[in-house]
Length: 255
View 1 (cartoon, helix red, strand yellow):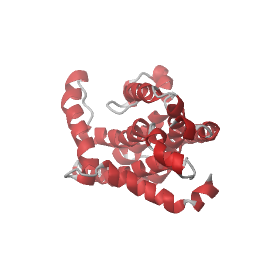
View 2 (cartoon, rainbow, N blue to C red):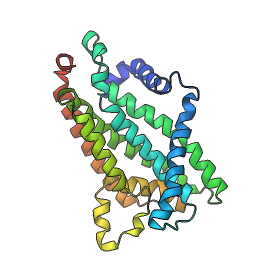
View 3 (tube, one colour):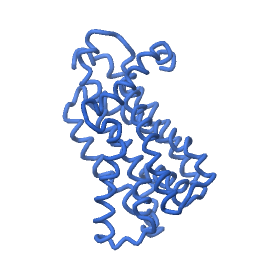
View 4 (cartoon, rainbow, N blue to C red):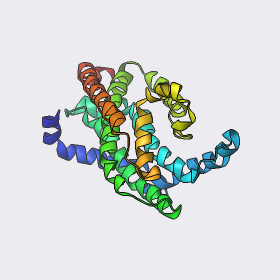
């Protein structure tokens, strides 16, 4: 895969640029929607959620933003990228290129958008008085873990969607359910310790907690949990790539 990606690196660059520019093509605000969308989402939850669960989390808006922005990257990659093979069926039928470029470009463009959105996080932690710490140096590690996990999942979902078109809607449903099973709107500390292991079965629990540790709590993230999530992510990536290559043979006929 790496050999093919290097050979077609210019195509990969072009595909990533296309995803970034095409997402907001024709809109007045353009790439600024990368900031506006999550801010509007945070505004809704910040107004409603404290009244529903009587949440007393300090700097709750900042707390929300740190969790919602990486989750937005996940949802745009999986929900928005599952149909990437089907949507590019015309090109796939006419030209040969490594098909894995399509899901890779989706996840990579999402990463770039998230890095741009990190400006929002930095602004909020500074203006809320939380400030930045040396632990922000662990950000690349968490980014890599999330990137690997999402790419593995997208390899699976995008290849299955070619054969089962309902997969896109089923996956969107489970992504929406997973949102509430991930400590984004709430802190994982709200769960009793004897039940916390259930929450930790979700790999995004450790990922979101990792972001909160370095940005919000200014502490060392739980490296043990992140290590296990990284191992899990690598396994998902290997399985996902194997499934993708197995099903790739029929892409041209099915799309």
